[in-house]
Image (cartoon, rainbow, N blue to C red):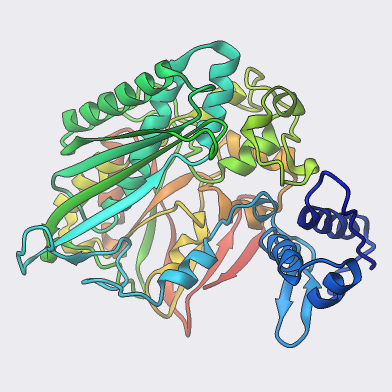
Length: 468
């Protein structure tokens, strides 16, 4: 194809290149596997820097539309490119793992979180764990709700989301002692005034207090509120957690064959929740937001999305926040904003009862049902008895027509925590979860393999294969 840029247009040159190639792929002008013009050729033909063309090609590659091949330049990817990638996010964070996997793996390589020596206390038998995460783009849905209703209390749930995304990762290395949290709020003060900050701070304190009431020792260590209007049009909520524990208590996730995989449901209402949980968690909300919500929000709140995203992927859904969520008693807004469930009280109970028989814990966050591929060596994960996806996930798939294979990589689809135990201990895990009002079931097992791979049977009977 010919790529022609208009040097006098208001649209940046690199964006013009992106738009022309993306449109050509959508319309079939560029077919699957077809080779693109070289970076040098596009640059020379248009009198522009090669770096500008390379920037455009990298963005298209990240969107999952093209791929670089050794000694062959860039070609159009095959069908099924990810809508998630096309919105500027990565389900499995491949590029992040490529950067960090070559670094020091810490005191317990292979553990769910990096475990270091006890640099804080100098105890050779102890270790430190520090972890950072946040609520992601779920905060933007809260922002839309706030702007529509004027109710800042919606941000109480966002505060919980940010904390839980750290807390439940820490659970997976066996952390059961005191954890100190620090929160960071990055906001556009023009759009998110003081009452939003107030709701986030008090929401954090209320959630931490609830956890302490249920035996989870979590405490606030303060935080930071930054007014960064040039960086965000809305609000970003992140947290950092730090703890010290004995090395002997670390769960190393050294998974083996012949283990049962028990999934803990992400939906329903457990004993320490005040409302029914849709199960949504805090992963995949970029796609959920755009695929579910209508263009009404793009028109009214342009500050809530990246203008570089292709227009056909921006708020392209059929719903507004107040509309009923199909097959659910919740509205679309309630389903998407349902606070991320923590499993901390449950996991503490399971570890107390089973001890070393808990061979592994996996929080199905980034990568969702394929997260397991990052742990163990030579494991075939077989997930063939999954929960039926809660209504919110079926609604997202129905609105977006996202392939089920991608849905299972982006969303937890019904269980967000996995416990790996001998088959003889499955019932003990199920009973522990039930004592907190959480459904649990054996959703699969492990077998030996040459390299890590996953065979997943979807709720509709379809079978999907994933490799590490």
